Structure formats: structure tokens, C-alpha cells
Image (tube, rainbow, N blue to C red; front, side, top):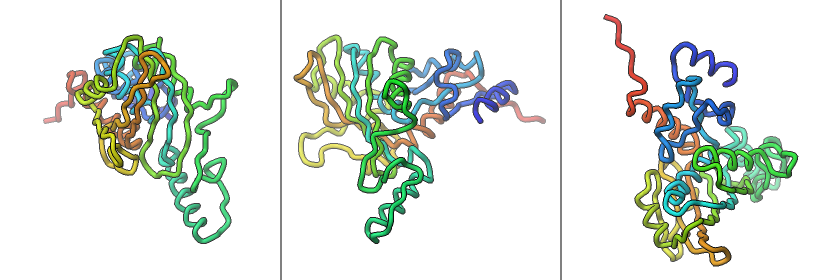
Length: 269
């Protein structure tokens, strides 16, 4: 739908902020997370289209960018814990109905997902590719490179979990330069869009349940990784319907307005 209609709409003078995956990998279409590179919105002029990133990538790059500026990221290993809302309304209904069926000892028949989602996890999001990775995992690689640095090496395992809203990610980062957990914590506290809640005590971290309805990307469990030189580990949580989709699109529109790249048309007399 977007491939057909976005160019038509743009041809009439509007700017299209697209939430699908149709334009993310087009070299002439900017892929934008405003906290990461808001100035790149000016690239809309080539096709009149701006792409919104994949939900799992959006929250990741918000956390990675300020750390990359300080110590330059070499490699990232990510395991995601993605809520069913990322797969749409039918997926949310399937989790609800299957959960109810478990308690009522009814038969469970997967429809939206390949396997039962209630009280289970599924290491499969989107289609499988020839190299064994899924397209969701491929998206995280390509989009991170496009928005932050093409030299970053990233590998991901994307998993669907029985949570209604809120994506979580366990993120392992290897840097070129030394960066301690304390330094990273201070950098992220000052970074746009980030909210650090990291107390080394029971409950001193954020879960997806707590991030629902919030705009921030929450970061917890920041710690040194002793298995590699210049390594850090952290836990990243965000509302995938907000930062991963609707909120980010609104922030892109705000970036266009704030840079005076678009203006309201004058009303007719």
C-alpha cells in the first residue's frame, strides 16, 4: 500500500512519514529516529518520504548513539523480548484467548503465530532468510548501520514473548575505546529520550509492564562485560507502540517544523 500511495501523496506536495518497512532501505529516503540524527530529515526532498524504523531498532539506537559518540561501537549482540502488539491486534487477541484457554483447559490452536504464544516464547519474528536469520533480525542490522554507523557489526536474535505491550532487549556492546559502566550511566542519563533506572537491588530496573504509555526509552542493568575488552551489557525497554511507531513519527514531524522545513499553508481569505 505504501509503495503505491506514498509517491502519489508526495507528488502532491505533502511529506510522507511512513511507518511501514516499504522505504526504510531506499538510499534516497532518510530513516529517522530524532534523538539519533534529527538533522537528516532534510533528506526528504529527494522523494518527499521519510521512513520510520522498525520498532525493535528504534529503542536500540536511542541507547546506542550517545555511547557510540563517546567510545565508538565495534560490535553489538542483541536478544530481543518483543511483545505481541508488534504483530498487531490479532496477535494481542490470540495471546488473550490462549491464556484464557490454558486456565479453562480448552484446546489451543495457533493462528497468528507459528506456535502457541501463551506461557511460551517463540524465537521467530517475520520470515526466515537463506542465512538462517529472520527478516526482523536483518532489519535491526541494516537499520542500525544506516542510522548510526555502517561499520558497526550487529547480530540479533528476535523473540516473541507473551507480553501485550513493550519490547525489551538484552544488549551487549563492544567498544573501540574504554568506557566504564559508571561513565555509560552518566552519558545515558543526559541523553535525549533515555531514562536510566539502574539500582542494583531487587526491583531496581524497568520491565515492559512499567513502560506502557510512556515515551522514554528505559535503560537498566548497565554493567561491565569482563569477557571482552571494552565491553558493556545493558537492558533496554520501551513502549513499542509509542517510540517504536506513533511517537517517533510525531517526533519526525516536529523535527521538520522546528527546522522550518515545512510550514502551514495560509488560509484563504
